Amino acid sequence: MPISSVALQPSAAPPSLDLTGKARIRHAALQLFASKGYAQASLRRIAQRANVSLALIGHHFGSKLLLREAVDQWIVRRLGEAALSSIDLRAPLAEAAAQLARGYQAGLDVEPDMRAYLRRTVLEDVRGEALVLSLSLEQIRQILGQVSDVMRAGSPDPLLPWSAQVFVQVFGQLVLEPALRRDAAGLTGGAAPQLPFAASPGLRHPGRGEAAVALGLVHSR
Image (cartoon, rainbow, N blue to C red):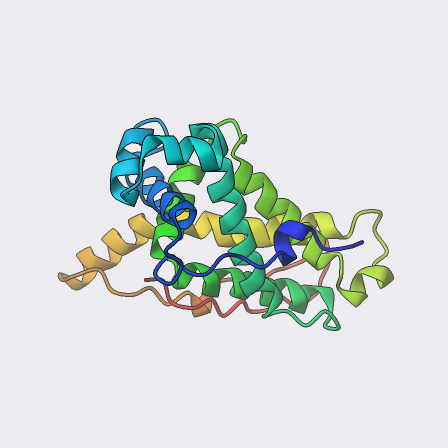
């Protein structure tokens, strides 16, 4: 099964290095969608932040909805690159899933705007319709589908439990992070510290006695 082009297609350069109008629009939209929410981030505000005209947004993206879809696809490409560089496709499926989760975490740690956007998306997407989440879940499934160990799995759909666990481990942490920071700050009486996710539970196959694989997640920022 080929890995999705969303996972493999090279992404644009980071916003600080890519000064094209299209890239500035996409990055401005990402920032405003993250801070204001999709409904409150008007195209006029996005144009002002990107220092472009409204007409240029229409030229490159056509509409606000299509602009959000472009942001979502860009995020998934960047996360896919980080994830693919972290996984050994020859490893056992449990270990490969743990590596994949670490890869996504590493990608999010260096992209604070992306992290904030995904957190808001998870919290606001009560109907499960967000493109970025469905694309990410499909990407996780397709990447794990390349692991050699999948061919030896006995269940009809061996990817289902593992892809679900990686998805929940990565995106669930984004939702719980603010509460954990507040609690940690209250206990220490100071600023919220970085959280050591290295002790997070490992991935475990439901209904089997396999040992969990420690995720060793990187610290949050």
